[in-house]
Image (tube, rainbow, N blue to C red; front, side):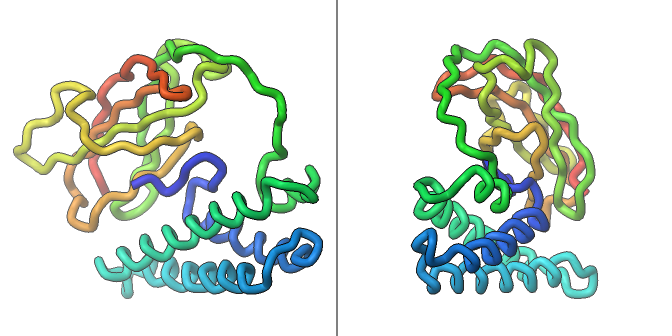
Length: 221
C-alpha cells in the first residue's frame, strides 16, 4: 500500500520526523492554539512507538513478518492521528504562514484555480527502496505537469508469481492508491519478494479521469 498521500512525506522516516517536529511546535503553542495536552501526549507516544517499530523492522536481525506488520499498523495509527490533528487544530486561526512552515506544511492558498478534465498520460518508473518496497516515479508521456487539470494520480498495481499470466490491460489491475506526489513508495507483502509488480496510472481531478498510461512491470525485491 502507499505510504503517503497528499501532504504527508513519502517515507516513514519523513513521516516520523514530521510527527516529532509537530510535538515540539505544538508543545510551544499549545495554549495559544487551544491544543489539549492529552492530544500532544498521544501523538508523542505514537511517534515513540513508531520510532521503535521502524528500527526493529529495518534491522536485518530483528525483521520478521510480525515486525513488518506491527510497523505498518503503528504508522497507520500515527498518520491517522496526524491527519486528525491537522484537521482539528491546523485548519483554523490563529495559525500564521510561518506556523505552517514550522509544521512542514504548505501555507494555505485561498485562490481557486479552475481546471478541466485531465488529458495527459503518465507512466511509472520504478526504483529500489528496500526489501518488499518499490519507489514509483511518475513520468509524463504526454501533456504537461503544469496543466491545472492534472491534480492527482491514481496508481493501479497488481502482483503475479512466476508462471502466472501478467495483466493484459491496465483495467486488470485490482489494487490502487491516490497520490498528489510525483514520487511515492509502494510496500508489498513479505511473501511477494521475487514476484513481479505491474503498474499503470490514470490522472484524476475531482472525479474526472484521464486516459491510461502504459503498463509497466518490475521485480519486487
